[in-house]
Amino acid sequence: MTARSSPNTTDTIKILSLDLTRWLVEDGLPLWAREGFDPVRGRCSEAISLDTLEGTRSACRARVVPRQIYSFLEGARLGWTGPAADIATALQDWYLGSFLLEDDTFAAAVAWDDTLSDPGFDLYNQAFSLFGLAQVARAVPAGRDRAVSQAAKLIRRLLDGYHHSEAGFHEAVPDRLPLCSNPHMHMLEACLAWEEVSDDPLWRDLADEIAELALTRFIDPVSGGLREFFALDWTPAEGTPGRIMEPGHQFEWAWLLVRWGGSRADAGALVAARRLYDIGWTYGIDESRGVAFMAMKDDFSVHDPVARLWAQTEWLKAAIALAQVSNGPERLAYLADIPDAVQALRLYLDNAPAGLWRDKMAADGAFKDEPAPASSLYHIVCAVSELDAFSRAL
Image (cartoon, rainbow, N blue to C red; front, top):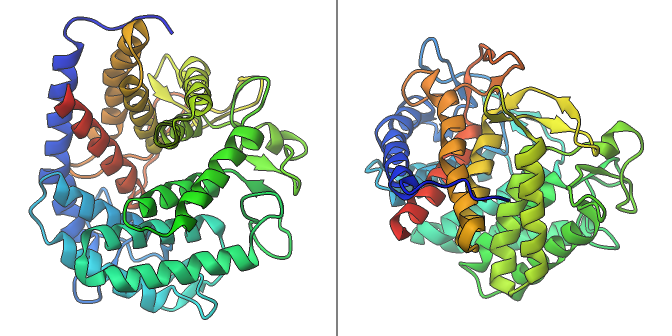
């Protein structure tokens, strides 16, 4: 990377951070607490309409609930004065009451009337279940014991029933193809969250296993890019699926590998993270729109030009993480990317009512007309949190 920073970059970053945090605590979280959460039933909505500003009554996916728990709790740490702990507790009660199955895993979706609309197993949902439980264990003392107990049951069920013979996890039993790197990314995130609140060595050991799987299998040894889909032996899946690389995931894995590599003093992880970022930045950002798009192939040609909000937050997080562990011109280059990533994110926020967002941008720059998905709040909050901490340390 070459230096792209200016003398005013630090001041710019601080201003951008204050503005995003203000948007979150004054616009975003109040609206989602009011319209995206039902205090009577203790449940959350899958999305909020950009037209009516009301929560939708569609089925709620399992991944949404733990994400909302995190968002409200982390939002409180960032200055939101709403009833974060009460909302998180109510959501956790609803989640355990409506999504939890007899085998200690979580169903994929629950309808508006709280009946199971999709009882299927999805590794991605289990990873977020663990992540949400860690947030409760960290920030809600009254819920800690139950969260620890439920997480222990879930991870034991996954290790006993879904653990891959080499490393990582199967998508389902019997063997369902393809195996995927994405749920493992969030499993690593959950393990790192549990490391912060638990002395159980299982979490550290599993984090190490997943990180090593990423470094040895998910990441192509020649190009340094991270693939999405795999055969049962962790070789790339056949055909086009095995060639898919998502720019947003190059950034998100870079962020996680900086965190993991830093905690383990693993220089190789930091080298891999820098290469992932380089690939995402060089090939995964559409210069005409200024945003990271959805997918490319392993020759770095565009596969899916649609640009989703979440990829912009991961670009921001990765630039911050790498700036923190870099020096000299390299650090200046990452610093200069932070305002660009914030600007990419603001495109999605500024083209929607205050507190909401657009999710999908087409190749021509037009946004899809659809409700704001609740699942994006987690991405926004995490990026705002990373930027807040970083800017305070500048």
